[in-house]
Amino acid sequence: MHGEISFNPLLLIVVLALIVPIMVEKIGFLKIPVVVGEIFAGIIIGKSGLNIIQPDPTLDFLSTFGFTYLMFLSGLEIDFDSISASTYKSKDSWWRSPAVLGSAVFVLTLISSLMFSYILFTFGLKIHIFLMALILSTTSLGVVVPILKESGIASSRWGQSILFSALIADFITMLLITALVTFITPGASHDVLLVIVLFVAFYILYRVVKFITHKKLLEGIAGEMAQIQIRGAFALILVFIVLSHQLGVEIILGAFLAGALISMITHRGSILHEKLEAIGYGFFVPIFFVMVGVQFDLPALLKGDVSLAIIVLLLAGAYFVKFVPALIFKIQYSWKEVFAAGALLSSRLSLIIAASAIGLKIGVIDNATNSAIILVAIITVSISPILFRKIYSPKKVTARQLFIFGASEPAYLLANKLQNNGYDVSIVDERKRKPGKVLNKDVKWIEVDWQDPLALNNIHPEKAETVVIASPEDDLNKNLALQLVHQYQITNIVCLISNPEMAAYLKEEGVRTVSPKLSTFLMLKNLVVHPRAFELLLEDDNVYINEVELKNNNLHLKTLQEIRFPGNCLVISILRGEEKIFPYAKRKLKLGDKIVLIGDKQSVEESIEMLSGK
Image (cartoon, rainbow, N blue to C red; front, top):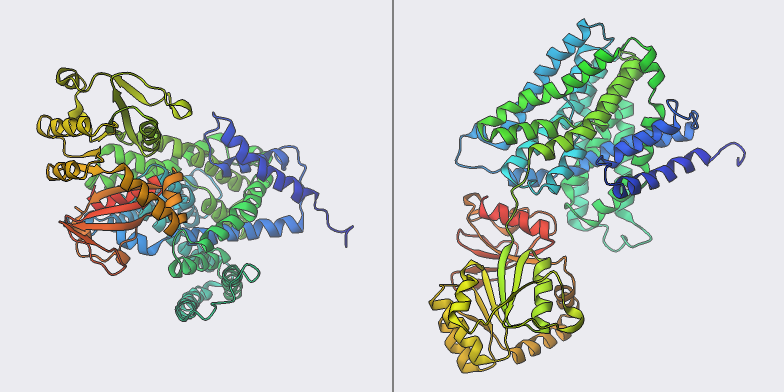
């Protein structure tokens, strides 16, 4: 057995899959997705390059399963609850909603693609018009989602419109490709009705898995050794793959439905999702993309009937059939957002390659055309995200300005922490003090005698969103706090005060006071009672806490469990007037509630955008 199987080609591919992401990350000018780098690496070692990798049954199987697993991950990526929750049901006309606009964009894309496919056919390209139309209609959901998240617009109304367009393009195109291939395959046209069986199986398995999960029948056997959830996920994948194969349906649809099923019964960001993505993107998926490059046949492309003009025409069509339908977004959005959406939706990769491979397998697309389509996919997935970023320049969020009066070691430590949380911090004192190792040279310094009213006026303290007064003298702190309240009308002041009577007086003036002795006691208490949680807040700069007022009419009287907060954002407190409310799952929110959020910075900021109605 050892002499029959060589692991050398697999080793080479796995090493390339390891090196490519590092190169893309470290080499600044390589602003391309990792998958494009993997395809290029495959081209170098494949039949269009060094021709090191030869046809191998093991690699073919791993590549096929990698592709199938990618379709599974595409289904897993869809968060049906999030889309329904964040597709705002505004008071605008129904036809302005993201769901309707996204669906309309896809319909127009399909019509445009049919027209363009006919043009390609008249130019002599050996294609099936309807299959080529579906190939051109695809969008890479795997590229669109991370770009939207990275740009901070995934939960916005515009972001949801783009996301819905990409989702429809992936899912409906996959269904139509499956149906079309079944029709045009000799002797199998009647089997298209068997697709219904696949969806019946989907519903039955959904109910069964939901029942098992609800009844907690697998509790106690999901330890590290059992990994029962992972085993169950792979069992579902193979059930749908085998069922699709037996029904004569393309296995990509079965794999996609398996991913969608798991997405419907589990939560986004769960450990199961992380493990499944780690398995796929860590091993199977890179093999598929490297093998796409290995099988890319540049000589066939150059020697075939597909001329350079046809390739340019195909590339132009790939953008035309996305940009023109995207014009319908002008109903709701600006021209800048319209063209940015068209650019991002033009990204294509896995599904277009898969659809082309299916066409090649059933004989309606030749090798040269298949290679041209792969080339178009590589170009669009490389250019489109860059084009999107060039067109859409997100508004720069102005850092919240904060003054700390009184230089001390705690002041510098506080400044460091607040800067990591997005504040523009300035320390104000009469002379610059260097508190040893904690001095951060990046902290702004204003050297001024803040006891002098004229000097204080020169620094414009009213520009600050928040003022912290942290000198060691109670009288100085009290006088400055009162001056800032009465003269500059600053409402958010935090003041260190040891004297309880003075603290009570300042509280009546609207100043928040902190007693150094009491705060030390409370910190020690929390470290004893809640050590892990409190250490997390003290030491982890990635933990972000912020407050937002609920202004989104669509979330009025919604329960917390009905609202899908982005990422790992959690509600830790609700303030309704003077009443502090515990945030349990069935607690209903009301307009005007002050909601305190905790999580990573991006998740909290996306939640603030959602709750504030921006």
